[in-house]
Length: 426
Image (tube, rainbow, N blue to C red):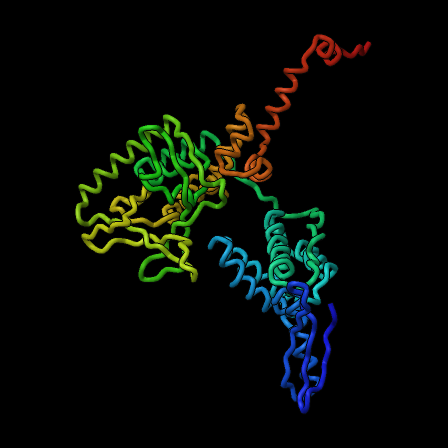
């Protein structure tokens, strides 16, 4: 296959290059009508590069990294990622990537420069290692798509990037709820049925916060004792229709079924009875909701919006949400704000979150003999490494128990005799 040729045809110039053969016959791509040879050369070079890249314009010499990040967010992230992930990526891009790397051309950024950026970020801030990993993830993802999807660069400079060894970083400490703390919290909020039932649901299942508050009564089979986890709830900037949405679970394996323990089953049944009573009590003043499909530009449903019904109107797409206020008002995860202020300030259980019930559940059942693969399946993890690295925690108490267990299994009379000798001081 030949290279680009520029020829003069009368008073104008033409570019031409050979394309692939079809049925054994040579094919050429050409265009004429350029006033100068330079114009023909520039247009021909662009067309030839596009041809070599299967019709994709090659922009490596022009686009800045900042402009590319905007392009990537709009064309890749908003199509392939969930809303909360997009928001997290946007924060990282605006706080760290654009200010430090945005002025450079996408094609000029090398692995050396990018490695220096990662090292500087890790030295400058005291984030958890997980958050540093997220910054690196966004950086690597943006360059991967620039190279493999859009063809803006020929080589991905982030392929070998790794986080440096971090000697002093903020430890991502997860709170493991003790039985005393659980009892204290439930006693304090014994008159708040919605909060206590939501608390018990996460406590006894390890469900994510968004999964708990996305539950509808159609998801809960009280007869067979099964919860079907299909959605997660999240919020967007509020407008006249509200701010809460139902989306898919965090991962594909997040869609799952969980068996309900007898304690939780009793709590859910009683809470259901209370809610039905409140519906009768409030009558027409009780709030009901329906789902509105939100589609992307291709007409594909990407999420569902939770919208309050008009007064006295039952919508055909009605949704029977589980965790609502007494009058049926749905406030999503905002339901947790006031109780956790009390938990932190009045009860003195500092630095705990509703989400920590998930890790507490995983840690406790693993310590008591449940196989880690079963724990991963219950939590909705596709691999056990995620369960091990992020949800299974050790404490001083558990480490002490581990040593006590080892002492029991290695006991012998010889060890006992050797360790219990008396010093003869005479």
